Length: 208
Ligand SMILES: N[C@@H](CCC(=O)N[C@@H](CS)C(=O)NCC(=O)O)C(=O)O
Image (cartoon, rainbow, N blue to C red; front, side, top):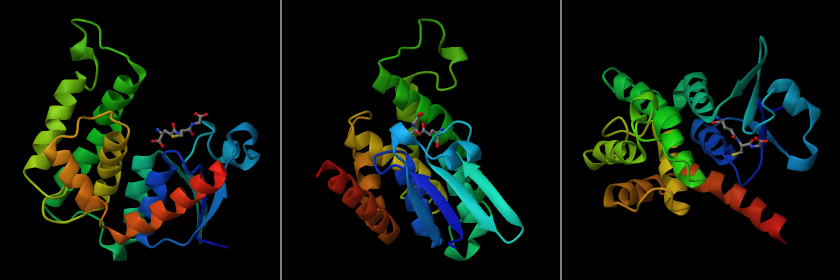
């Protein structure tokens, strides 16, 4: 049995988890989920019945990990040999921007894609404040450095980078130079390329 069982759908946030699995060098077996006919093992592991869902078959017993950002952080932790954990002073940026990605950034991008606007006078109650504020903050981060933690790629780049890469592809963030340059750096990662090749091939096969 592989170390991980990975429930995914090729055109989904499962792409984030697959990239993280490849960066970590993890041994996994995929279960491709049919939306209309989801395996009972998925709901048993994750009552949200969503992908990605990961089961780690640890020596002490199975552990379930859901939520893309948590999956990224967990894999970096369990596979320290992959060198994706933050060191020393990098820890602040690693945690700060990983949570920013999973909170304000995801909310801002999804709200924009859904056509939701924060009502006048309610920005203070919305965790992301406004789409513009969130996107400008992200641009500020990526304008001054190559990677989330500075000079070194960490697992935070898999998560924040996936948000940027995906949003650029779908036009849900503007193609500002800092975002485009960051996405270009991400796409040179062997782990990105091997993971995306699998999902792209699966998407192509499904389209016939
Ligand atoms: N917060 C979750 C979101 C997961 C999620 O919404 N996955 C979508 C695919 S991208 C899904 O499974 N949708 C099916 C459904 O909700 O029924 C994460 O970050 O992993």
